[in-house]
Length: 561
Picture 1: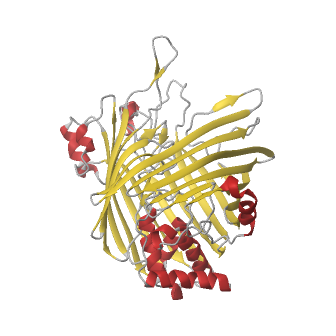
Picture 2 (picture 1 turned 120 degrees about the vertical axis):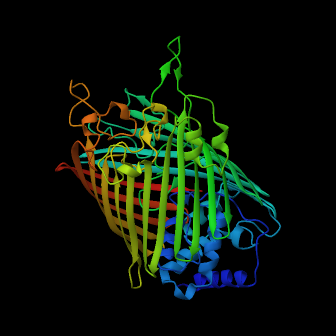
Picture 3 (picture 1 turned 30 degrees about the horizontal axis):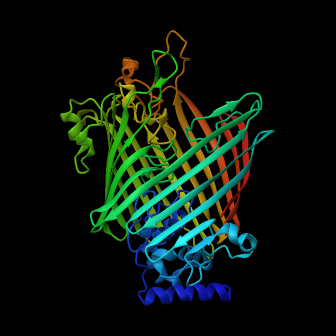
């Protein structure tokens, strides 16, 4: 460790030991691609945290700061690379962990604008340590107010077999914390050049509205996310349109976070050894009708309500209970806005018209360096048929874990198995399916699927992160095309109407039905943070589907300022 890094970590420890606290921390959401997630999960596996991590994302920066404080007291137990990563996060959580100003602000300054310091800022972008706090296009900071504006640009080269194409994005994001009120906004414009034989969906599309120009083979789309929040003694209240992910594991059963974002109202509150999260959101149906003049698309109303209660009885043990419910074709139901209402019972009292899902999860660390988790999703069940092959046993199972590897490198092995039975997430009403814009909100592969995944991941140094995994996916698909006179759905898509099923299989529905499509893939990802706010990412993924091999690869450069 260099003298500069040793000094920085020592300063952090002194500030923490003296109890120097900021007057307020930020409630900014932690983006899914942030290093906080893999780092803190690795620290949890090693048994270095004092409480389990929440399985609801995004995390909030002020909550993450509490775990960083814990690690600051245990630096003697961290490996060299882990201490460097911790110092990087401590610097980026300056507002939550100290009362120091941003390095670009002198003691008497409260504003920094990039155009006024163009040459100096460009030099700093290349010469500053990666663990330093990032610079911004615009920064305003006082004792009780904080605001930044950041630019973001990305260029990607994608490969499929012998074909290549370019994609990328450019945009801005801004955040403001004003006392107990916080606001975030992000707007990105994406471009993709497609070609015959390589018209796969863009990596970033997530169901966004695509604009295609057939003359130039240019596909463009844009997206915006944001939220406004108020923090009080009663909890954190959010009006947002940003990614949500609920559930343990590599690929959660409940809300994957891989669909297009949707607007929601959310309330969350941490209690004694527990956390409660509630939200009510607005979804978009997969299909629409046209207005009388034939020009406007008319989508039916569709909503999602959910709550999750996580309990942390021990430092190494957590339980959770989840309820989710989709309904539509009518105005919002006030009973689904009450955070503590049991949705299952409320739905029954509204004449059993909607689609409710129950979930139970456990995460346990039986010994330091080994962590396991298990999930059970119940879409519908009867106690009398619980062990039968009844079609209505719409369930999902998942078990997985991670093992910290000994040695000087911060690596871990991870593994996970998932099974989602046919017809799970589906409903007899299209507006009640567990989907948003036609994409399943739960397990990314949808129902009628079984997946095994395993691999190793970690850091070579603080600047170099990698993941190497093997993924085996079995997916049941319809054996006959839709235009075949004998066609019938077999529960392979959450959008399917289960009234259309073949009732001959009502009591012989296996865990996988139909024609079983097998996909085996190797996934190697490497990320190099080559400067303070710049990353180079390399992905290589050979994929075999029913013995036919397709080679995918991509390299991208992203710079923020």
